[in-house]
Length: 378
Image (cartoon, rainbow, N blue to C red; front, side, top):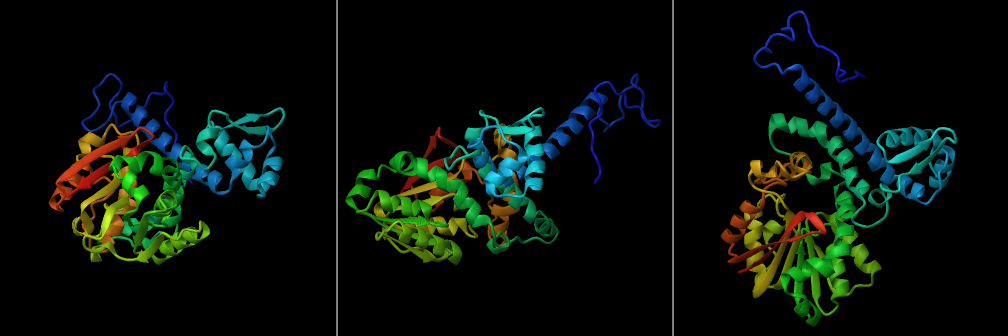
């Protein structure tokens, strides 16, 4: 493996074929200070991307949670507590220590999870970003196949991402647990009707956690979840059965085929429109499936349709990456529109109006800055 190293700040770069420091740089060549900044930035990306992989491993193996429950401990003690191989644990500890996640005491040869990092690397709540960092490895595993479709066109199918539904459910579930019933659904103005009893459908429901949460919270209402992945629907049904819910059902269905006419009082979809093959058609089906006084709640990524407006978003690079490697690709694989993750609120609002919605209102929650919640009525 080659080693990339940023030039030391006091190093003068002056190859024989390059102008000296008394001359102007040649056209197209950065000056020394700029070159050092660029190389430093690229090396930092290399390092941070590598740490993201280790953080994902720390989540999946339970190492972060194990360390949160231990006093300062040796690699052997941590490995024993986690039920893992010590040699791998020791090397992993080296990496997360250099990242500043873990404190190392060389005299005692012990490691301790940094207290200020623990809330964001452990637990089942929405603040655990180690769970989100697992997505980096999933995207990396798909990158070689995405490279090929850059050359051939088309895209990859959901089956090419065997971890997708699991990762998506693991990442979105804690957000839904924390905010869906108490903060998100009230945006629709439908809570009183939900308590009284209405017909609700959750579209592109994945493993059905949102539908099951709503069904448990509002036992007088009837809920249906739709998704075209049989494995996801099987997981949704299993959770409903485990919770003893009798007011929710799940169907394998491609939303492009529609979901009925004037059948539902409330329709919801969480980050499920932009990767459809025919998002405009799906939105038209949504409008048709609503009762005359019905409400559609669409949660999607809070970004702009215009690149220049996204430059200040701290996680914009992640949004465009997951779009390139997954969301856009699965749509293109079906011969679809390929809107991508960053289709943006401007295009979304335009398409909602074109689908027949006369009222389209955007809401944002401080608790979840990643998404915008759009409440629509015909």
